[in-house]
Image 1 (tube, helix red, strand yellow):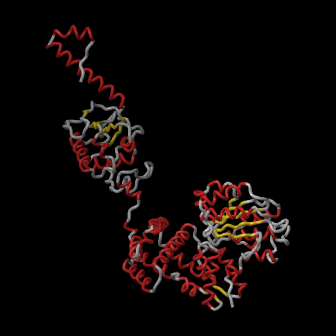
Image 2 (cartoon, rainbow, N blue to C red):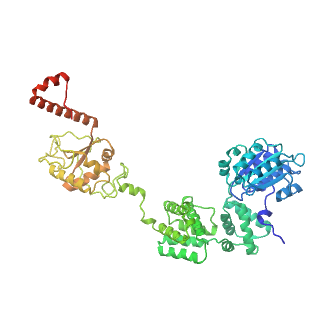
Length: 580
């Protein structure tokens, strides 16, 4: 007895029976009922999603004598049977473009299209499958007939790779109505399988059907073919064990075991897991794809709290594993795993075991990696917000631990960073921190009484500042280059640091940064030190420098005229001046 495959036996005969492609079937049905059928269609989409099936249903609807007013074919008359089965029909012709792809085949098709349908009121329908296989010359031969087709002639091109048609024959795209078929979801495939198996009188487990649906990768025809294959061994009932045995699918417990090893940091056990899979004959590439799906499941559980594709009896197991991984860790693991697929190394190698073991070891060492934010801070990037409250008596400036704060002066800190009026003239220093220290700096006093806080000596403060720049101990990261080039003056109660506008001056204006430096200097001198910041007026500095250089040149010219008085008339007459 001959057996009819489930994919052929349960092929839809009506628009309403086509699963999940309502955006195409409903449009075509209404086009038939309203007599607005186009002369050329392009059906695009992955394999096994209903492209050829809908092409046949459209041909049946156009030539069915018992068609309903809604545009549905009856599916049972002689014409519908011939079209649906793909056997001989005078008005509906199916062509495989993979074997009839040349220009001669296209010319023959064009000549046949010139003949009228066999009966009045019927349509001639040409279904060209795998249309992307046609050559450029064949498309050029069909171009004219597609632009001005004969009456009552319909062309339907089905392809899985529409981009090849765009590259080979771009003008064809504008002469066809394009419909994009989508992949079927797991739940949709499972529902259809349950319906078909119910008609066949076979039982099934939902988990088994889910495995078949995932293996089908969005194609209904593939799912029905796999179910037909499993039914041959399962004796009328499809169970998960039989499906895994026939399809070579790795048990779900293996993936749970993998994540248990990662949670327990059992790196030696990872080698044993991969070795056991290989010894038991499992396809390691198939296991790798299962790892990708498992990581995606854990990530959805962490982000959404649920995953509809998980069986009810396994939901608690997956949820328990997901709690041990942060979403960021799962994203990084998923990115590492995807690299094997995108780089193609897993497909090219003869040793997938080594690649998988290396991948799982990288998973287990995620706790040794450093977050990019911490790395930026350690290199001198922006730290905590300036208005963040200090912790532990001082600001937190990673990775350096701030020193203990010194006694705070009783005078309140002004909001402006400009220096306060000084009772005595300050002692300017050189641009760098290494100038000779002057002695005898007076202590700052209040208006009416004794000093409000002890002031460190100029020498001690200079030495503390120089030591801070040399060692960098306690200095916030990234400030050292700016402070080395700063102008520093000893003022009453501390230091005045003058910087040009820029990132160094902006960071030093922050209270948390100043307090960290003040704490280091106070600890070094043993007395309270206040740091004041002032912005250098770059334009004024440049003007002063130009004036100074002009005075130097004039002085050199005067010296020269004293040595050579005979040059004075020429200098005064020609208005000469000294150059560099």
